Amino acid sequence: MSVQNRKKQAAEAIENAKSDIHAVADEIYKNPEYGYKEENTSKIVQDFFKRFNVPVKTGLGITGTAIQVDLGEGPHILVMGELDGISSSTHPDALPNGASHACGHNHQIAGLLGAAVGLLESDALSELKGKSFENTGCSMITQSLFCMTAQGK
Image 1 (cartoon, rainbow, N blue to C red):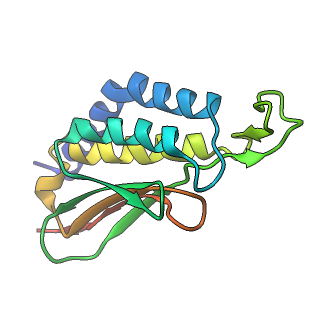
Image 2: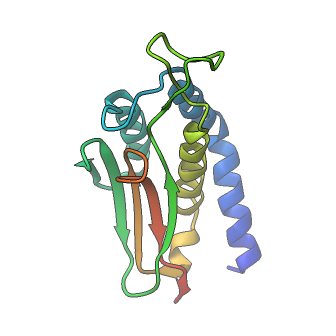
Image 3: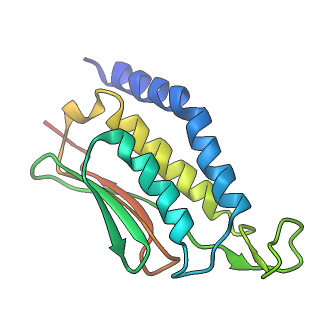
């Protein structure tokens, strides 16, 4: 299959999952959690990862979550997103404790999930080698990651 057709398949997979991805981003936005305390946020991402039928690693850097697909030797691509909210008590959507997602981390997670869907729910992996790794966790310590080898077979 041509590269263009693979890209089209990946884009279609993302389009088909768009409402699920948006729902995750909205849920995370509405329920911000401070660093190292992102238990609910981590669970939301873990539940989304289960759709890929690959092992889900948890407890990385306290609340981090990861999936990994090993396709052999090759370079890695990493997609990252952060789980934690920030303290911004003046933000219009801040919780009473001041936590908010004024940082946009909910959108980082949405991008990460879109990348995972594009690769894992299309036939794109048949053209790649290496390791796919996606991890979520607190800002700057354990991130939300998706690492994929991009070397063609």
